[in-house]
Length: 403
Image (cartoon, rainbow, N blue to C red):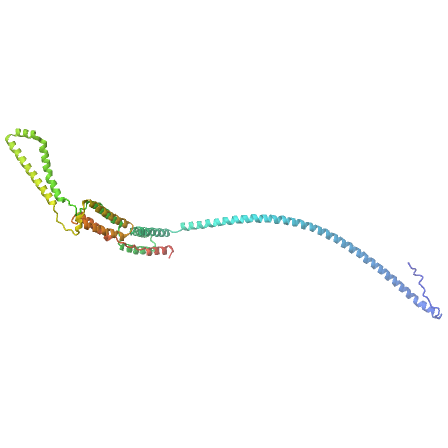
């Protein structure tokens, strides 16, 4: 420390006058003291400031160090937390991936079940719709189905009876329901029914029966080349010969002993009666024999018109083949009718008719009947198309659609 009581003395040059020196010392001494004091204050202020700054720096450095340490601890803690969080996140990600795989499998299973449920729902809706149809719609559907089936049967069999029956049945069913929208269907059925009835379709069943009857008659038809006894002569001969035969057989059974006993018992009158009985019996026998001979003689001669002379040259053994060929023609015609081949049937029937006219006796009633049956079949065996019930089908479709 410096002593403030003894201020430093300024050096006075020796060459200055002596009178002026005391005045200079007395003027500059306080100033120098003040300057020295100011310097010291400044110096101490600087030192104090420096100390304060150093202390402040130390405090700041300590605080900074404390903050860095706290930040480091926080960073370590957060890093540890981040590591734990990352591990947990990886674990959760793995679980999420596994869960996603399971969810994808479940979704696929659910989609399959949804598709199955959709199919079942569609079937259920169709079933509900079919069950919820009204009574009129069911009737219209049944009538439409019945008419279509009858139309197929008509096409197959060639007969209009199935279609006519189906139209009549449909009209009867619709007449039970008093519905205005069904009147149009009934009018269409009436129009189609009139058109179908107006068509004359061949009745194959009846034509087949006629041909069967003709085939059964072929064996009994008389041929021109074969002589046959007339039915009237045969019956008359049988009537005449029968009683004579019975009388002769009774007389033969009685014998001569019976005749003698009768003669003895009755006397002379009985003998006369026996001679008369024998003479009457002989007369009847003679008349019967004469009539039989006359009938046989008349049967040997026939007068008839023959358009085909070669028919008389037919040998008796060939008559079997003529009859069989005629049967085969009629059977072929029957099969052609059943298969709806009317042209073939017409051709076979014409050949059969020509065979009857050429080889068989047309004056016989059986031949006339067979010829008439064949002519009826020829006239009816024609192909006629059955009209389709288009008006009825269109009316049914419109009524089902609600129009």
